[in-house]
Length: 372
Image (tube, rainbow, N blue to C red):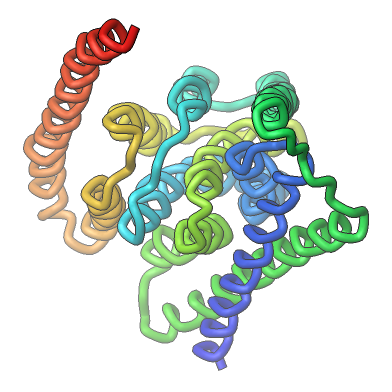
């Protein structure tokens, strides 16, 4: 029965992702909002519903470690696992808007979490600050997108004499229903998947720690995974990347903010989370900058690298619990050898990209001068 529920959960997740991507992309075209912004807002917020429910319930029930761990763990999973797997399927083009604004914001917010948590908890005032940031970010993204899309449409109409096709009210309602149905199926499918996977793991005598680090942490991010993978397969690459970046931003501003507001004492941050998990979240966010910058493409190789790092991150906790004597050696290999080599390769790619950009500028100037 548990295996049947696991399979059904995956089927429902896939169906929900298909409906959500299809409905949201059509709404974006009809409302004059770019698919990227839809991925950053509507899709990202909707797929983060499981994280919001889990963190709020944990805060109200006096389990702050679960609340902060859910946010930090989901952000690490979003970037390393989901973005890595999506890029392994098809290379993802990164929008200029993400590089200029959204990814730096994601990095800044990751540092902000560390600053707010220095005193050992994130209080209600901190939560209100984060929620206010979420409202401002959403409004700014939508308004900016509508202005840019209107400008593009005006140029197109002036050039070709063709205006934007007005979508009928009936089609708009249908697309809204597709989005709502997709979100509902994602939440239901993720719940079936997590519950059945926990049952199977316990029957196989897997420890509670391993269950929490793998199945539960990944389970709440199943909607993001299903949506980004399906969007990549369908060619909606802006939604695939925007969903990951938007979900990461929403987890900090919305999920952590609301959890801190509803809890009387805020969200307590353990020393372990402050010393280990939050720094990893910051490092993962910072790693996006050089990867996204080089050629504005997340290549299959980048995807493999992200995916491998998530496997190593999860393995470190499992090794620490099951083979403590080997954990120090594993950590030395990762921190002393693998991470520095990765950093050098990323910086080399950035320098090479900058040099190529500079070398192409004189050529473009010569071409424009000769044509003049």
